[in-house]
Amino acid sequence: MVKKAFQNNNEIAKKRSKRLALILGLIAFSFYVGFILSNVK
Amino acid sequence: MSTIAHADHDHHDHKPTGIKRWLFSTNHKDIGTMYLVFSLIMFFIGGSMAMIIRAELFQPGLQFVDPQFYNSMVTVHALVMIFGAVMPAGVGLANWMIPIMIGAPDMALPRMNNMSFWIMPFAFALLLGTLFMEGGGPAGGWTMYPPLVLQTGKAFPFLIFAVHFLGISSIMGAINIIATVFNMRAPGMTLMRLPLFVWTWVITAFLLIASMPVLAGAVTMLLTDKYFGTSFFNAAGGGDPVLFQHIFWFFGHPEVYILALPAFGIVSQIIPTFARKPLFGYASMVYATASIAILSFFVWAHHMFTVGLPINGELFFMYATMLIAVPTGVKVFNWVATMWKGAMTFEAPMLFALAFVILFTIGGFSGLMLGITPVDFQYHDTYFVVAHFHYVLLTGAVFALMASVYYWLPKWTGNMYDEKLAKIHFWLSTIFANVLFFPQHFLGLAGMPRRIPDYSVQFADFNMVSSLGGFAYGISQLLFVYIVIKCVLGGKKATSQVWEGARGLEWTLSSPPPYHSFTKPPKVTKALMDY
Image 1 (cartoon, rainbow over the protein chains, first blue to last red):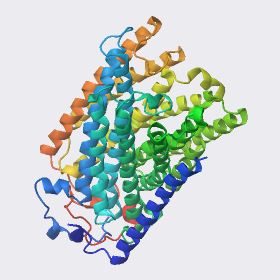
Image 2: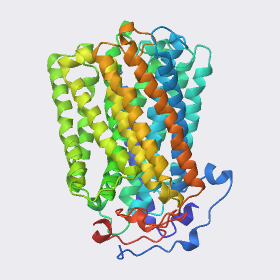
Image 3: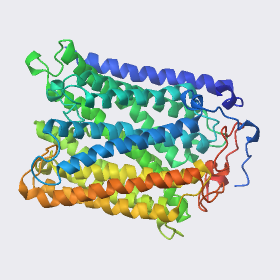
Image 4: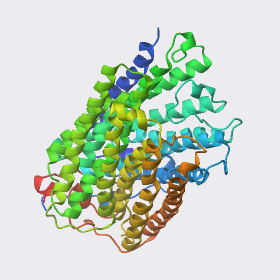
């Protein structure tokens, strides 16, 4: 089903999406960890 | 309209059947439908809790439930409505509409899309399950302030894990929306041609990514305070309970806009359609949305004026709060200007959108009143606050969601809904929502505190009126379910265009759209998006 939906979408868009997702995920996770650590005395 | 190269999708309309279609779905329309159905179920679960609250408050004295259970209802009603009803409805609409509005075949990350939906039923099973536990559900309010929330019994870890899961689900959904809009737009769909609904969702997604980890961090710290001996919020151990309030509202105020911005986007789609005019001031709408989002990170302490902040801090947060009225005013002005001299008709989506503009503005004005520091000392933690945020979230966000369902239901199902019944639903909802919430302004101004199961007799009359409005509003929503089911099962066939004044890529697809749409990217021109 995934292949079907993307059959005409180019590989670059897929790669870019995964890379962007990874970056945004890391940003969110670093906010989470950073917020906790910044409050540790 | 004729300039678009239509996608050849006739040969790709096969779809999986049975339970697997839903369980393993990576199709944005199916996942969007699941989000919307889930949200409707949660709307009724949260609504039934509201009915219990209003039944208890129908007259002074303890009637039906004990105070502990009442507090649980207040807490879980809020969590269910915010995280289970309004947010998933917005994500459901985003799933359904964003790919077909920007000419994409699906969301950018379909498997992650499936996961972000299926996390939610488990999270709510954890949360709602606590109501049947020994000691009952969480009862410290949706704000989870320590030290009160730390007195929660066995429900506590379930509450914390449910909030974590909901945060993960929201962040994954937000990442998917950003990746889709930035990487999957059809040729010619420039950023400044994006439909306003898409713009508001992109900005909302950034808000989610910035604010949800903060909430997750705060509840993790609560968890470690309770079970691992830390003292983040424990004054006896060197911590500070007010720190939690700062952290919570740093998330909590952007959260208000996470609920409201998609509603702004919906209304910005509907008003031009039924006014048969382009949206007035498109660029200013985009900039106003971004301004509201940015400013929302600098106003959090207006929720905590009474905790004893330094006077300069209070003044800063008061002025910053006033500042949000400027971009919000731009939006309201633009909606009104769009209607000015338009050839308006008043179908159900337009009626709900108009009610949104008027009633959300009332909620905005009461918000301004609450944002004035010295005045807030009188209103804080009274029913005035309850009236304010229900005008923003119910007659604001939920009315916009209702408008969107009537607006897009013919596109989703291929059938027109029953317009007469929808108008009856609109009038019942509008009248009774006001009967329900308007008297609560007076109760708050007269000093009735929020989150109490019993009250002084001087508040009896307005509470009775409010409860009657609540029961009538709740019952009238059953009509909405009937209208939706009736439309799904059949009715007058909808055309591709559905509404005479509708513009945009989604209206070039058949109603309902094929299972796989835009497998070949369409070409977007200015003429397609304009009037």
